Image (cartoon, rainbow, N blue to C red; front, side, top):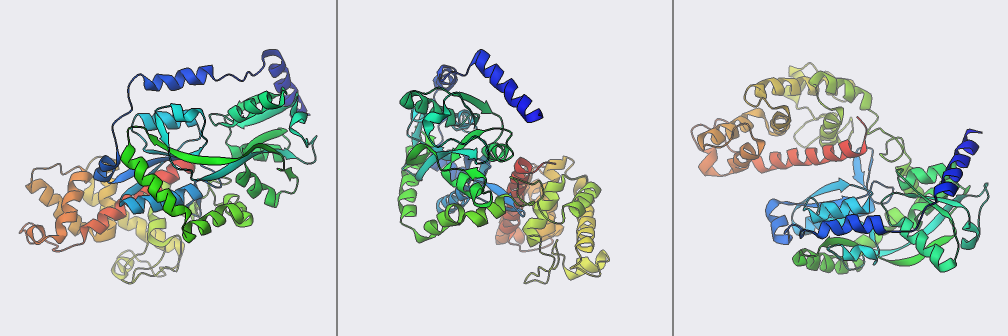
Length: 467
């Protein structure tokens, strides 16, 4: 009765007020971006700063977390691109296309890695790349409900779509072409949630890209995804119009990618093997359907409370160290979830390093020691965490040497950016032979990369997993 009442209320509102297929408001907002030109950032500036920023969606085919690991078709493509450019990858999770263009325009993003068609988006001070693939959209409905077999049967029906996407535009075009009239409701729910609402009969219809629909239909026979709303068409990514060098190298990369066996395998992994894709995205340990990172989340949360850390940060460290494998063993003899060395195991009374509780307790106690060591030198918590992580990886003696070098050369000893610069220089005789350096030579650049890796994973966990 509650579902019937909800549907009746929605229908009443739509009947009274209607939903018009007008893009006037959106065009006004988009054109406001053009009052000032986009920020001038091209390939050279991206390489100089050392990372590229891309906007992606959190979905079963684009980007998600599964058992602590970052996955998704767009994610793996972008990671390959970043490796090709010799830079790191920073991801921004958005589903609203307008917000994505605002990020691009203001320089807070460099690429929109979404399935953009050759439509109105190309007029918003952005350039579309060579086609990255082809995509069609389909109607998702429940077979046990009042299913439709023809587009014209949507007349007087209500279709829910994800807000901020191009779905409404596709439906409005369908109305115009087929001379039919139906209600369109833009929802704040993501596409996966809307598909689940159709499955649970909370709503009658939604539309999504065909691969997303097929992934869900693989395990839910009651879902009908046969009716195409828009035919298969080429889709691209977007960059700023004043970034021709980035566009050129992207187009070259895409051309090579389309001929590569690796990328054909990657496409098959996410779009052709629907059962595996569904299993991953609907797992308890997926950021799409669950809110767990690993089977050790509860233990990690207790340890994080002891440290005063966000538990997702500690989970990022555990993932980096062992990928949540209690039996992990490094070439240097480090063992367990937090990869503790024998001397550390003995110091903190860890008798069984393969026991997750003991390993976490020992690792947390060591992290508390490092926190105390750096607390007076680096009072600001967020900065201090980076010193702690580097010390966990390479030893606090080497980081302290870098801290002393930073002081000697008149830089900011409370800034990880400044101290990490000198940590990287600890492989240079000019610096590791300095009399103030007590721990000698070190591959400091590896410790700096270690910190960056953990912080990038942490950024993803924060964006996709609830506190």
